[in-house]
Image (cartoon, rainbow over all chains, first blue to last red; front, top):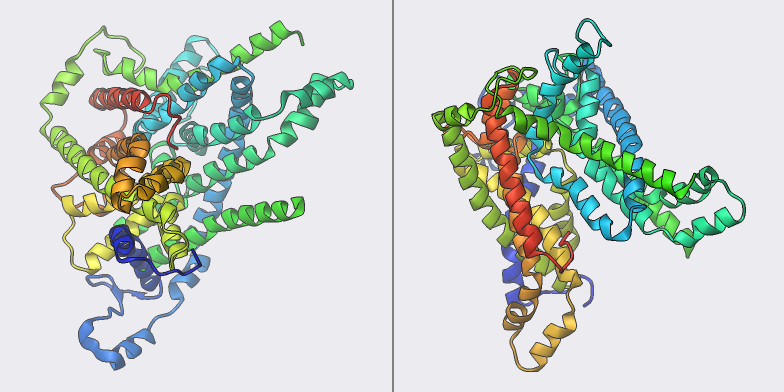
Length: 304
Length: 263
């Protein structure tokens, strides 16, 4: 079928429901916050102006459209809370992504090298917790990390520490929470990259005198690169916008943009600023995805 | 390294990994049967927290809201996702396919806070009162995207020549689809429904934005109590939810058995 082909009546009917739904409840709201991000914050309901209404007529609309401005975006750069929240989100998500790579790689390797008949069961068991409630899994860590929690209790019983280590309400706890919650995202792509590798390549390297370490560094690791990159993106992107983990496990000083946005919206009622921050967040998160996609395309062309 | 040492270190890594994944959940479940309020003291086996949960009217109401919203939004999301997947898999490059494709996939990458914020401002601007309806709409929108991806993957896996054969033998396209393709993708449709159901049941962020007074969901209740610290009642309800997911996962494993995973 040629590009831009017209659909038959029946097909249009099938497409209509999902198309209208996603337009009404996703595209329209997204365009709407883009518009609010250009408005000014006021003490009113709704708390921004201008508000376009049908009764204005074209002249009124043009008049009001002149009032739209980029002030809210300027605030993003001048208000240190936003700048710090973004930078701190990127940093926390970056550290957590590295940490989950360190945890997931050996785990995935051990599963990929396990006897073949065991593998589906192992990977299934490793991914299963992902289906349970995210909120509950984060909540479970509170009991482990708090001052009177299990880890502090165990460390004290072993005589390793005298006073409880402050672990809950720290940035470290947020990193642990992210690693725990998003581990399957890192695990799955690395596992499939490792599991699909040709065993004979490793045997050949070993036959040519490479030590097991050299085999890993020169054969196994480079061949799993794509899985690592995919896993890193799948952890980094949702972690950056995370709200629940920094709110439950982080301290009051743990700044993350998802949390700042939430507070801005529910507590400060600054809609234009929150909308601008949301749009900026979307752009920030799309950049690594687009870079990844472009890198993939260049790779494909180079291979051709 | 000898083969034996390798096997041993592999087993050690696997054990450590599974302890990390399951440890916190197991601790939570064990604590829900602990008579003591303290995490570190075992006060004996008790089901009293489950009993007190049953007399917590707020919690029960929230659970009802959550299950009703999950059922309604999962049904909607599965239907919309099925139609969207059919359009994306079978209609070729229709005009505005890119826009539709992008719109269906974008919510998968966007932070939930952004989605929630967009929906809330939209509902308020249109003067739509927030409550159960808006909650279902928000969850259906979000879950529909996951359902589309799952069903689309299954549709791409089925052989179009079988449907063509049915049409050559005189079946109209709709009938050919219902009789030939639909039975093949049915496991994926069931999985999509279960996925949409668990997404809705679990969601805190979008629900907090989209719902209104009178329609507080279970995760919202759990969250507001969890912020204040660990309580045995929350442990009990969490354990019940974990058990529910275990049952659902087992059912879906049986349904999709032998056909490969749908996503």
